[in-house]
Length: 191
Image 1 (cartoon, rainbow, N blue to C red):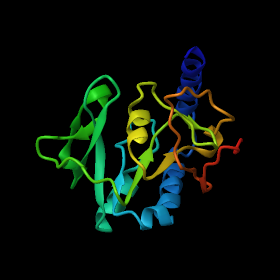
Image 2 (cartoon, helix red, strand yellow):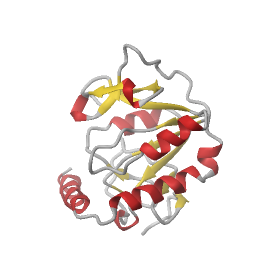
Image 3 (cartoon, rainbow, N blue to C red):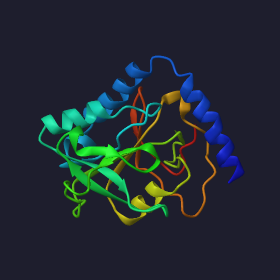
Image 4 (spheres, one colour):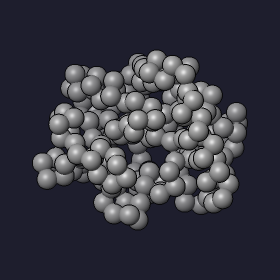
């Protein structure tokens, strides 16, 4: 746990120093938008970015224009449980847990069918096996464990790590999108 916390600190600092963030964010989003994973999905499970996270608004706006459904996570409790709700616009959001913009569950429909979904997963860093280092609350690990669909970790290319420390409850993503490429994660993939 201490090693993961130290890595979080290191990558939090690296995020503050990233150059050309907006351009890199757009390239990451473009790599996702031109992929078959996106094209074949009927709904996109996304996240609304914090200021230092990879900005996903291009993906959300494009998906809405393409007639796809967009869903964002809502933190149900502090035990790592979250649910996704459809949004029609950013007006359907309000500030929720941990300062994150979340769907207004009173007016948004809860996602109950995850078939034909692609899930975009944030993180400080990923390794090429698909393990991620997030904020340490376990929300995405618990969610990814329950469902079988395509998942894409969003990561700056120079933030890719060698083998990250992984615990039994850590879940992997299937793919990683960087500003350079989108690739399939494999157990024997190392940076």
